[in-house]
Amino acid sequence: MRAAAWIAPEQLALVERDDPVAGAGQAVVAVSACGVCGSDLHSFRHGLAVKPGNVLGHEFCGRVLAAPGVDGLAAGDRVAVRPLMPCGECDRCRAGELQLCEGAHQSDIGYGSAGAFADRVLVPRAVVGETVFVLPPAVDDSGGALAEPLAVALHAVRLARVQPGDVVLVLGGGMIGLAVTALLRLGGAGTVVVAEPSQLRRQRALALGADQTVDPTEADVTKLMRSLTGPGAYGLGARVDVVFECAGSAAALATALKSIRTGGTLVLSGIFGAEVGVRLDRVVEKELRVQGAVAYRDEFADVIGYLADGRLRASDFVSHTFALEQIADAFAVQMDAGRAVKVQVRPVQVRPRI
Figure 1 (cartoon, one colour):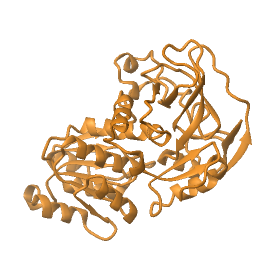
Figure 2 (tube, rainbow, N blue to C red):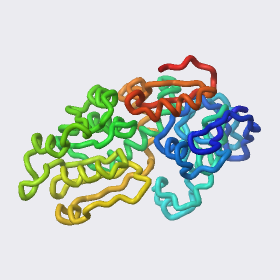
Figure 3 (tube, one colour):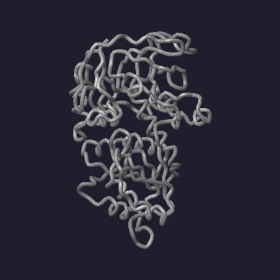
Figure 4 (cartoon, helix red, strand yellow):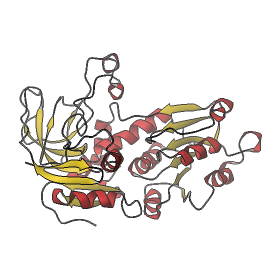
């Protein structure tokens, strides 16, 4: 089969690999679509958590080719796959907190094991309703491959505990920030503002339900929020109820701490990739609830339901589709925030949607 192997920073190569073979309790999936994630870009550019020859790709769906001994799964089933493979044995897994699995993660698809920028992929631990989710006919391949990032966003929104009428600031309008925006609107948040440099992504945020957007490179985000909420404590900053930091940016984090009200909630879902200098005094003085949000717990089934009933639409997020042979072009386009929202790769030959 064909697979796109990481060779060196900013270099991928299409190579031939042996077809994966499923053992008992595993599955082999023919990949239908696989999205290019922000973590894929970190690996592509800098070699983050990847070695030469590794195959990236973890936002995917496909059709089951074999699943020996897996209850509820048969050849031909269309599935979305949870790429982070919980060990099922650690304290966190036993408590149902699969996103906090303390296992070795050597089976995580796209990092511990071969990823889905390939014709076929092995699911090392196939459990229906936990790591493999059968897709209803109403969810197409584009939607199936979005289940993973949408689950990330839904997990962050649930952890935030946003109340009806809350003023919410979303910092970063990439895939996660846009999905957070859409889910906030579905959940009844009050005013939602998205700060994002890309005009394309700001426009998409408005289409997904944001009340207002702002380019943080051209305007003072805290000043804008102050105009909407009034000044914060001691006449400083603003009074935003909940802030989502989805950019992984030191500047965005500083904006969050200035804009949030006393007793507010700050959700960190972006990956910074480096140490970030912040004034933690702001956290103490404002008695903030700082909530990390990693991956997903049990959100896959819910976002698949949202896609099936039309509350979420793949077309609102997927901006480009490339064939596997065009993997280099796919990564180049995904790195251009002014041009792309979500890029997906399909192993079958397709005409690029650009």
